[in-house]
Length: 368
Image (cartoon, rainbow, N blue to C red; front, side, top):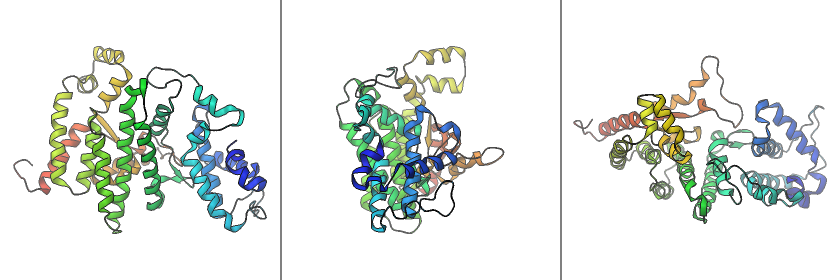
């Protein structure tokens, strides 16, 4: 359907179903079997398109069973490849929107009208906002020519993350109506995306490629615009960026604020209390809380950094991302993540250690 609606008008059968099937076979061959599930359909389609994009970038689509056969020969002209790469990049980056607007078999209309469980995880009609946020949070499928996005060129990542941020802002400013209670999740994702983009600019700075003052100032606005929520990890994410960027005075101000927030939150946060002193009674109380309340409490005790946010993480924590590479565990394959691919910390002790390091930098020995 994607081929017929997005590529057939401009390229007819020169970009054929056989090209897509070949990408499909190679995607299956290079990923784990448990990835190919109905509830993971969007991600699977992204895998296939990522492999097809790799073929187009290399201008070579090898036959799956016959050696030394380039299936683009005699089909696609040399000058058409760059436009095709741009086209498929656009399709991948806007895949859900593409599907929602699909005319064939009314698939887009069916997707938009589908009623799903309204229990805090999924919503019914017109819940594209929430569905998108859930996919951003839990799927984490960021690929570039079939490899992890963190390995893609810096300029590509900047463009990708800035476009994604703009899209999320559009969702945030839209009328949410009954779904306003899920706003916290959208804010959390936007905060993580700001951190992802900040990491790219800090990487650029570390490589001696210059320091983009305008971009960094814009990033500060991106972070602070969404700090009004009562989720402590969003504050901690921004403070961590300030520390890694050498803005120790500003970081100290936020560290002090976060310390006060934690002190107030610990009095009523059941997840924190369960973490400190596990009991069946507390577990039952947590089970009776709403999904929204549990999510907010959890994100006020713990927070995670993904591989794409590495430069916004203090160096002493970065090795956490590789803890799964030792022993019998091997890290996840192309584009997929597990808990081993994330840095996950408890906020409070992390805060104290960052304060300690900050006071060293500021030569404030008593506070240190």
